[in-house]
Length: 396
Length: 139
Image 1 (tube, helix red, strand yellow):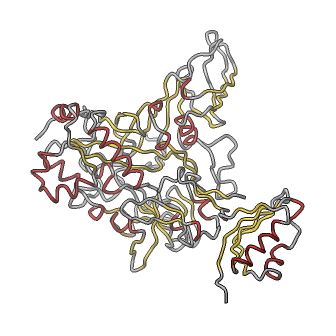
Image 2: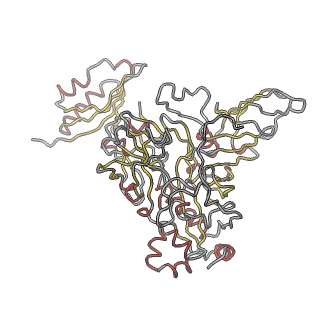
Image 3: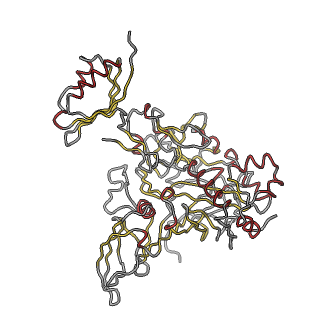
């Protein structure tokens, strides 16, 4: 048994034993669970992939004369201005003005909110255009200027939903090619795609949310951010396997962090043909080894994590809940799965190689005493259902 | 019989040269086996051609001397499709769409993506499916 304070004291003294969620598997196999639980202080987890529910709050500071933005665009991408004077919120899936979207399908979606966020972190010069109706104290009606992230007072990433615990494997049962956020899916099950770091993924290593909660400090694209709430659509009630690992989406994290501290390599604009734009984001989450039970759960292997195969031509869009079957991440990572007697080629939207790099970076930062753990002050709910939207008449 | 070799070339023609039957002369006068991957004439009437030529070293050298008599830029790396390693995140979304396995994952333990230019037939499938714009066309 260890406490957060004890683990942090070891980290500060540079003596903490830190392994990645991949390394810990062999370590525990060799040393045994109890000895390893005594020796190991932290296991690092990570993921990198498109995370659509991401965005940022930016504060521009005041011009002379002052202005209260009522409409604004960065690089022609609309930002939300229904906040105080010069605060805006930019979302990753926002398209550039006059992007033809899917008017001539499939659309290319070359530039959108995710790309603006990536350009901000990369330190590029960007153009702001803002309009206002004008008030007595904020008389300015129009503004066009260049800026970079260094000119902003705050650039905080505020992501309502990141780090999905598990995710669907997408396949196409129809006769035509479909274009989805899980990539291009060829007709008649010619290919499948998945999106998870599997055995490295944060919430798959803490399936019951025993250590990752509200207040947990995380590695967000190089910055030290934190979990500020349960993520949107968080639901722990779905079916779990014998390792307590959910076999569908389940838990999510709402994460925030300072974009000025982020590294461009881990913040990427995403263009998904026929779907739209998004943000490719790298996140690392440390798991404190408080006891043998916590350690045992971090030893989860790809072969012990199943994902549901879902038809994105019918079952997904029509919200039928139908699942074709389950495959594990060991199979998925071979690039081929067996599905109802047929072999299907598999691609991924999640980068395991980037997740590995992040898990190593976080491990090394903790080992050098540069990253301390924080004890969550609220747990993520385990027994919360995921509600659908019922389209209905006004209730009496 | 002298051993033959195969070289991949990208030729870029300015406007004034696009109407000349250079390929025909490569085959007839220089005895080369030509395999064209991709050819394009832009709206500005510039021409691009990515091809394999097979013949003896001497035949290829003579053919290139002939090609150089035109106002043509020759790129011996034959790169009509460029994979930018820095932009590639290694997600692997392209791998099932690449028909020849030019984009592939050599080590399934680390899952990084690599590009084998030799295998690329320039179908351009990767340009469309890469979420990060890591694959681009030279023309």
